[in-house]
Structures are given as structure tokens and as C-alpha cells.
Image (cartoon, rainbow, N blue to C red; front, side, top):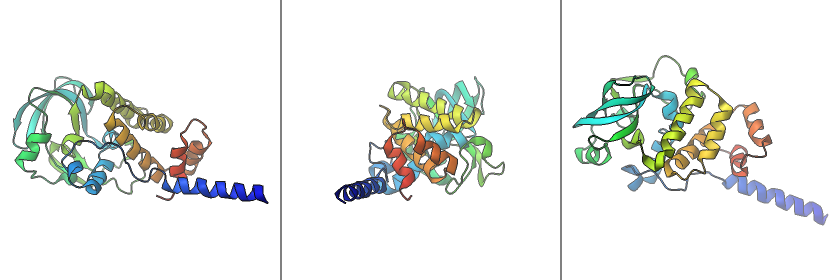
Amino acid sequence: MKKLLTLSTLAVITLVVCLRAQRGYDGPMDDTYWSKRDERYYKSIAFRTTLGVFARYSDVVGVGHVSNIVDDHFTVTIDHALVGCTNGAVLVVYEGGEGWDDGCPKYILEEYFPTNQSRIVFTASTNLYFISGRKFWNHKEIPRQPDDSRENLSLRYLNRSWWYADRDDGLLFTQFTNVIQAVRFDQNWTNYFYLCCDGANSPSNRVREDSFWDLRYIFYFFKDAQAQFILDDPLVDPKHKCMILAPN
């Protein structure tokens, strides 16, 4: 009887741990306008502007040098094309804004636009997909018809959509290219899952934060076989398994 009681108590404790595990990201947040002013709104932005989301939805991803910063747009000369562009291409990129709403005050753009002549990694789109509630995880599954579109190639959200190429000693760029490979070109769910698991422990704050939200996205929309794969793998951190067992 005492042994049974002990096991029951352990089960309850385990369930409580799972119910409380990783319900929200509590680590360092990316440096944006909203992370300093409204944490709840910032987190809703972060969930929609992760490396995984950009890898799936962006029309253009590349590395290049910035020039001609004018009001709400700047020019990028591509030296390392990743998606939807070629080396040597010269692109004009507009601020766009989260939710594609234009009109950020000039002082915000000056703070969160890249500096002139800097080398950046950037993602931009003319097509908009409302990702909330969608169950596809790779680019191939995205419907051809966008939910909305813009006339100009635009950032989805200021400096969440771009960063300096040498940021975090290149860890951010390396993680992003690996994610693009897994969800855009090879479309390998297992590789993508492990990238997110590893990224959740990265020395890069942005990689760690985005990997957390990308894992949440996986756990919102996993299939039964994928959930079982995660639960059966002894190398997967128990905190990630708890995210499957806990209600979203």
C-alpha cells in the first residue's frame, strides 16, 4: 500500500511538472521595439517571426550589403543567395511591418534598420500567409494562393526579419541555413525537430528563443506518429516530451 501511494505521488508530481513545463518562453528576448515595451505583444510577434517561419514562408532569403537607406526602404546587393534571388542581384526592401502595416515612425526605423554599408542576412516577401492555425511544417505544403500580398518586397517585422551576418559569431546564420535546408529543400521533419531541440540550448539568444517557439509550433500540430517518435526517443530532453503531454 505504501509503495502504491509513493508511485501515485510520483505520477502526480510528474504530471504537475509536465503541465507547467515550458508553457512560455522565459529566456532572453530579441532586441526589438516591443520587447522593451509590451512583453505579451512581443511574444505574439516572436511566434510568427521565427527562423522556421521565415524558412517556410519567405519569398527571398539572402546575404548582402546594404546601401541607399531612404525613409521606409533600403537596397541590398546580394553576395550569397539562399532563396528566390541570385548572387549580384540588387533588391529594394521595404519595412513592411508586423502584420504588413506600414507607417512606423522614423525614429523606430532609424533604430531598427541596418546601418549603411553593413552586411546582413535578411528575409522578405511579397506574399503573406496567416500562419496561425495552419498545420503544414514545410514549404512544399504551403498553398500556392497567398492570403494577401504586397506590391513591394518587404520585411515581415523590422529587425526580426534581418540581422548582421556575423551576429552571435555566425551561429544564427548557421542555424537558419540548416533550418532552410530541412523545411525548404530536403523537407525532413526529423532533421528539423532535432535542429530545434539543439537550437533550444544554443549559446545564441536568438537561436534559443526561436527554437523554443518553433518547438511549440511542432507540438501544436504534430501527427500521432511524430508524437510517438518524440516520446520514444531516449535522447529527447524530458521537458520537450512534457510539452506533448501538457495541454497547449
